[in-house]
Image 1 (spheres, rainbow, N blue to C red):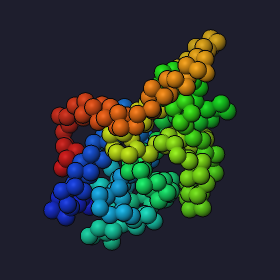
Image 2 (cartoon, rainbow, N blue to C red; image 1 turned 90 degrees about the horizontal axis):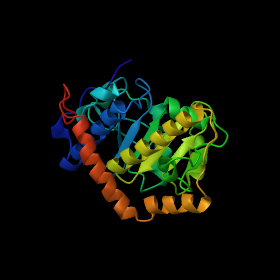
Image 3 (cartoon, rainbow, N blue to C red; image 1 turned 135 degrees about the horizontal axis):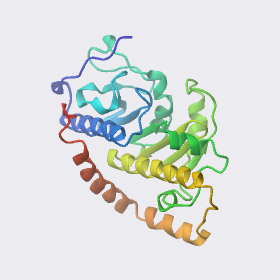
Image 4 (cartoon, one colour; image 1 turned 120 degrees about the vertical axis):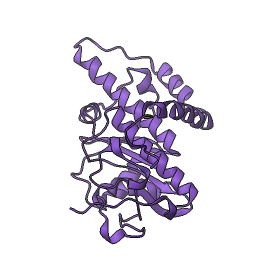
Length: 258
């Protein structure tokens, strides 16, 4: 299988290059927190100023080695739309889920999809994510579910996925994994980090075999409101966390900004 060659910085606007750097950093942070599935799953982001163009990983590059120049510019159908595209390869089928949200939601700037053990385990449970941790309560009343339809190759599924997602920013794909859509790359990182940690906490709590404690509904709702009641403050918190998280990947053998 042919893989994409790297994109020189000179072919990008300054704004596109900045997004490329942030997206490459997000790939590396997802790897740092062990949320990868080898070379599978994807993280995508809009190209600034180009309504229907997106950046996605060059197929076959490990997430912890992703660089800004490795990312590939594609359209809504997964076709490569940058210079030299005829010699490049992306997993267009893997973009099916991402394209659904990018098409339907202008605020879906960055979409993250994962196949972690904890995420898949919770996705296979009838009651889904339980309100048993502070991390989980961030998503109380703000989490969507989508039933499993097989490997996401059917473009018809996009409409059903969008309908199930509604106005939420996070979704559990039944028997499959996790999905989030952020207004920015830092927000997408914040969402997938919290959702993954909530799933990890649930599986750990259930493995103990003891009866679980559920906060009262009024506490669940109040906590969710504390997390989600001020969207602009949530964005600001995401930026603060993002700046701190970048320190975790500094000093790598290769710079993600290359």
